[in-house]
Image (cartoon, rainbow, N blue to C red; front, side, top):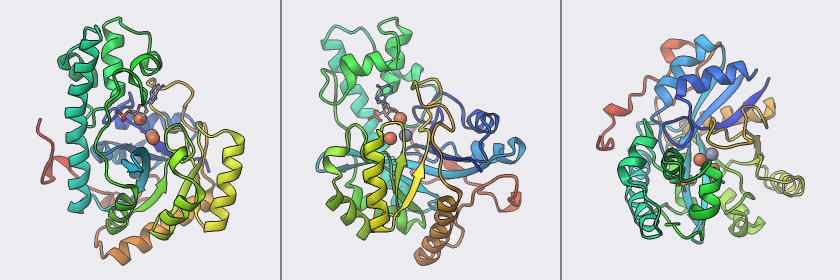
Length: 314
Ligand code: AMP
Ligand code: FE
Ligand code: FE
Ligand code: ZN
């Protein structure tokens, strides 16, 4: 079993539509792929519908933007009930602030003499419902102002860069509580990667574990061998799940091809058990389920984000 528990579609900052992502996961020899777009469930229906035909299991999830001591921390939520309003409202609030923040970034770039507009960014973003810095980068690449996303981040958009603007995100501890109340399983994404390492020491991770955090994404490209070793010891000590993933973004991020890192089958099985427990404890009557070769299509999540109260303005 090859299990990749973190990937993005073009509903956020990946480059493949959700159904294409699922087909590519199958072609890459994966048995299980989790769709974890930034701050949205919008790709779920297309990804879940593509699962059985492609012969791959799709786990619906989300990668939520959160903060710890002002630093950005990403929290993966697996199998949250998409009809749980407190969480969908919070995701909508994050997306709304991301849109105004992108206007501020474009303003900064303009004052730095970089000739792009919000219209350029909107057309580069295509069908994305969650806008991010990568879409600004794509707009600049389209205008011939940079070679790729990486160059734009290095020169302008990285944290502390000349056109960097921060965005709203809830404290990680609150996000974890929301994911649990939605019957989902919360896992810290790349905890010792770029921005979050400074604020996610062992004491803080133990605090989050006591507040309901279920796992650590350890096998991730942003973690060098020593970081993985340290995190594995911590996961053992705190009895946390250990996951691995590609954090695939299509052609938007080099060196993150599907299946690059994977999750052990026993860890995946435990994640599904924890989700079932969480849904029971939270009293969520119709928790979402993974879709795929072994699933009953009648039970697959028929989630329609357009029917969701508080859906984003077009
Ligand atoms: P944002 O969501 O707007 O804060 O932007 C963060 C996203 O940018 C991350 O989820 C990454 O996917 C992407 N990113 C960060 N650094 C780079 C880079 N050097 N090259 C390409 N994408 C990047
Ligand atoms: Fe991303
Ligand atoms: Fe992330
Ligand atoms: Zn990610």
